[in-house]
Length: 315
Image 1: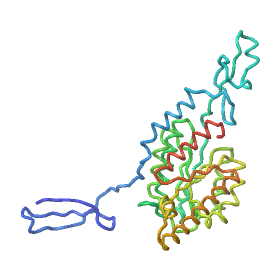
Image 2 (image 1 turned 120 degrees about the horizontal axis):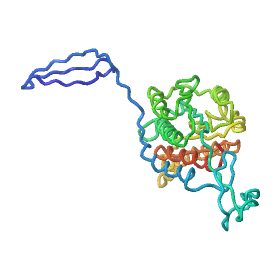
Image 3 (image 1 turned 90 degrees about the vertical axis):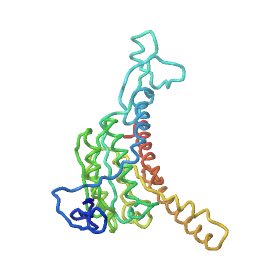
Image 4 (image 1 turned 30 degrees about the horizontal axis):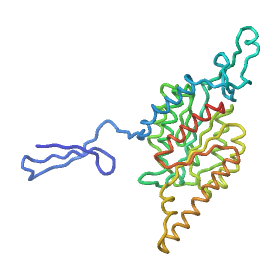
């Protein structure tokens, strides 16, 4: 007898199917097993991690900055060379030596990052063959891995009208596994996200200034009343970074010409694109940094924004 196994169509007990040697008869049965298999979100953007770590090493080791940012700490003194910023000259140390010395700074470590992952209806929309939520989770994984290697602490809260997952206070060595495991059961809920509750959760969780990363969709109808009124307050207390998944199909439709139907479709796509740009501009006016990119580019674009803020001393 030949035997093959697989899960049943309802996700219950595995099905065991046995067929005879000539393939003329077969029998099938379900057998309970004392274990469960959990499907973790795929970390597709992990292939970009070495590239981002190389840039991190440039920021943190090979290329020290002469400009002190809000989140920079003193690193060392070195001799002045032509082209250095004269504001970085350490006059007290220069007076004790025979050469002019300048201070160098490096991005601070042990910064805190709070990621809020929107799981409401707007991230249920599919871009390509997957929901927006899948691309957002991939971006969270790359950011988590990069932040852990940068020496920063990252917490995650996933919510819409209520909290669906939380990872808080996990050591850097285990935070990527914890975040991945927490996101495994998440699905986009077909409910309107509660922007006021999200803002209150972020403010309650992060009492000291930190980087707050909000992954949502730039949907005017959803953000105008729910989240936009709270952005200015969030940006005044924290460095706010908003990430969203753009649909490249909209750009393709906006270029349609030649037939009346295509022209009407292009007009609708152009309007949708303009509304999205207006939402991004409004967020920026209120103090947020906005990253709006297609699914395959969102993880790297978000990681680049994090590194740029770190290099500028804005964390």
